[in-house]
Structures are given as C-alpha cells and as structure tokens.
Image (spheres, rainbow, N blue to C red):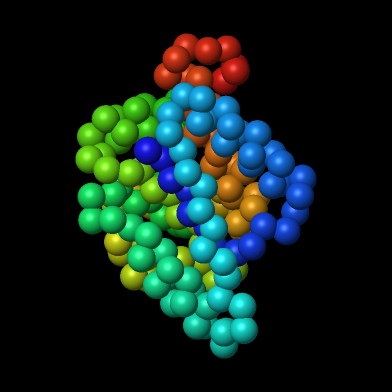
Length: 152
C-alpha cells in the first residue's frame, strides 16, 4: 500500500479536488491511503515540527518504508521515479509512506527515520501543493510502468 501523510489542514478546495482526482486514479491501480495529521497550531515557533514529528512517528509501523519529502532530498526524472517506485514497492516489505511536513518542515527524528529523502522542487511548496505534485507523479509513474500514454 502507498500512504501519503501530511501535516496541516487542507484549506484550498481546488487543490483538494485535484489531489482527490489523482488519488482516485492511483487507487484504481494500487491501494492508496491519504492521511492528515493536523498542524501544530498554537505551539511556539520552533516547536511545531517536533509536535508534528511525534504524530508522524506514531503512524510509521516498523515494517514500513518511510520517505521524507525535503528540499535537500534526492531528485528524479519521472522515468527514474517510476523505476524507483516499482523496485521499492516490490521489496519494501510494508507500506510505502511519503511524508510531507508543515511550515517548519519535518522534525529531525522523522527525517532520520526515513529510508529515503526526496525533493519535488528546489522551491518551497505548501503542503497542499506538494501533495498534488506528489500524487500526480505517483500516477505518472504508474502510467509509465504500464506503458500508458499519459506520461508523454
């Protein structure tokens, strides 16, 4: 199963609809679950990521394959990501979990727990934008692996 977990409430209906559209396309091909952990609102600056980090870590079973989305992470072409996704899903031994942090990013404990670190862009993205981009790329990767025309 692929799981996508993000910090922060969804507030943009258009991005939520777009994410739901890609999630539906993915779910017709592989099991998918989207999870929101909420945001550390009301916490002192510098404490938000730690609060969110505890929520992330609680959702990571020992047998999972967590991936942190971070600005300094590894970058792929769509074809490279498709090959990575296929190989990782075959050998992960548990859920493949993509984690998108809130406005302070992912806590160091969460980053250390990740088996991989990816970057969607050198630019900073909102969690909602990052979620849409990630879901679109997962869908694109699945079409590449099936030889479907979407990815061209």
